[in-house]
Image (cartoon, rainbow, N blue to C red):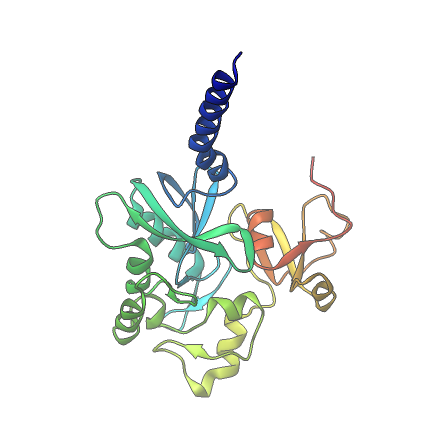
Length: 262
């Protein structure tokens, strides 16, 4: 082969490699935008295919979180918030625009997600219904919706609750939010919002326990799987999780004595 032909072949190969390069790079992480059928993990997160997104600017109650309604009764606000998000989607395809990795859990990305046919994002709609509060960092336009929900005592705001972030970290002396909070019932309210025997949500059998020793590894707690020697001994978990991903996203590490259940 002549030098000219060799040069032309090398140039053609370089061109093919250049055109293919974005595809190879794109496979390393979530696409900048993805549209697919959605699985609602909880009111904070949506799974499209094998990618899980946290709704940007949104902090919704965890599945095991308890709130107080406007009749002073406890209710499973985390499950209700998840169900509200599922109703908003209504089995439609969802487009999620990636806005960056989740700071506390790099496997998940933050996104602004919109159901097919809607002009308003799910982020904004859920906050406006009062089933989530605004959370930094925010690229989604949710702050006006958060102000509207609070002034209208919508959703969570009609009763009394703690910010999901404070529930996750077990901050029992945090600010009480909502129209039904009463200063003269502060101790009783906190006892309801942080019960000693936290009810396990359906199909969420992983036990989480807040632990100072977990901070050595940069975590706030330890989770225990069924089949772990420590599982039966963890009689009063601080959290319940549906998956190991959920536990890790909340800042918990697996107990060292754990083995995957058979």
